[in-house]
Image 1 (tube, rainbow, N blue to C red):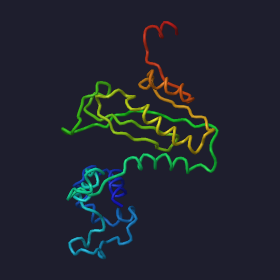
Image 2 (cartoon, rainbow, N blue to C red):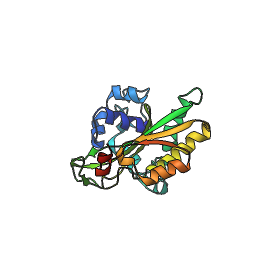
Image 3 (cartoon, rainbow, N blue to C red):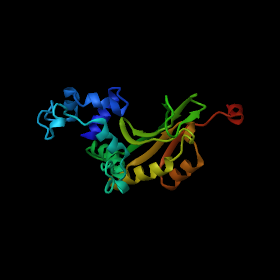
Image 4 (cartoon, rainbow, N blue to C red):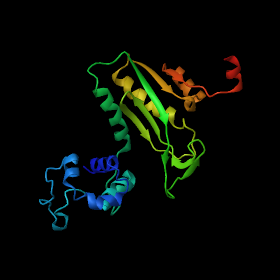
Length: 218
């Protein structure tokens, strides 16, 4: 419920946690989350009645809690199992097929997530001409298989081999005969990625950055 509340809030344009101090009263959002008590009148604690959803303080515990500290921490006792979340994205993709496909494409991309304050890990990115984060995404069609937040001082391909190793391994455990091909722009045309693909029988179609020799060959 907490994850759903936060995700729907983000999708509706409410980026800040303190927005949920008002959103917690919203019966429509409670319906989206899947709450049965849409007005919060049946909540156990009297101070929570009239609020079907969680306040910002509870969501803060979810976002800042870590598995290592959750047991002993007084306030941040809710912790996400990040490995399970990663596996879930791939499992949902695999479960969407009735039978294994002959071939799938994995699309890798990096994009800017602009920052408007002095957030931790804030860096200026020359290509996007702004202060931003540089998250890594891996899709197969409309299915999201990986979303990894990174600072903007990283190469566009940073961490791609680790994510591909994890995702391809999980896919092949279910679909050992499915042909896998990755696809990405020139930001991912790196020797480490191509070498990993060739070693692990994964096809690749990668863009090449322009240079004088290529232009002469054209």
